Length: 108
Image 1 (cartoon, rainbow, N blue to C red):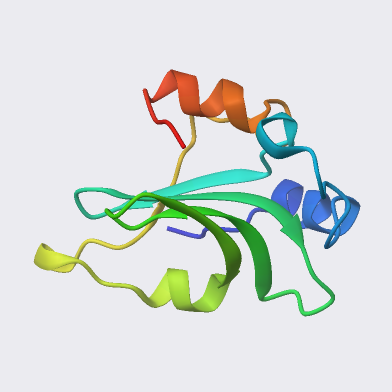
Image 2: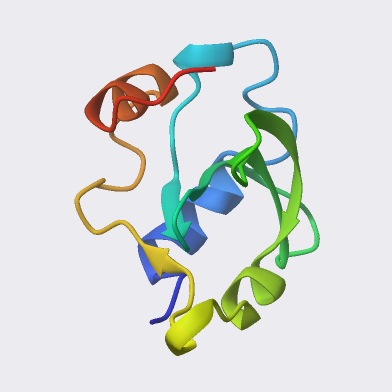
C-alpha cells in the first residue's frame, strides 16, 4: 500500500516542522499508519526532507514523539509479509490527535 497520497503530501507541506509545536492533543493529524499487533504512527508535521516526518508513535511500549522516515515505514515487513498500512478511516487533515486517539481507545 502506498502510504503517502497526493493529499497527504500537500498537508505535509502545509504543516511543516514545528508548525504545530505546543498544540499537543489539539494538533491536526495528517495521517495514521498501523501495523503488526500494536504499532501505530500519527503523522503531525512534515520537514524539508520529504521523507522525514514528525509525529507520535507507539511501538508497543507507550507513545513517544519523534521523527520518522516514510521510506523506512514503507519497507517494514511484519510476520506473514504484512506491511505498514495507512488508515483509510481517518480523512487527512480533518481531525485532532485527541479525536483520532479516542476513536481507537488509545491514550498517552
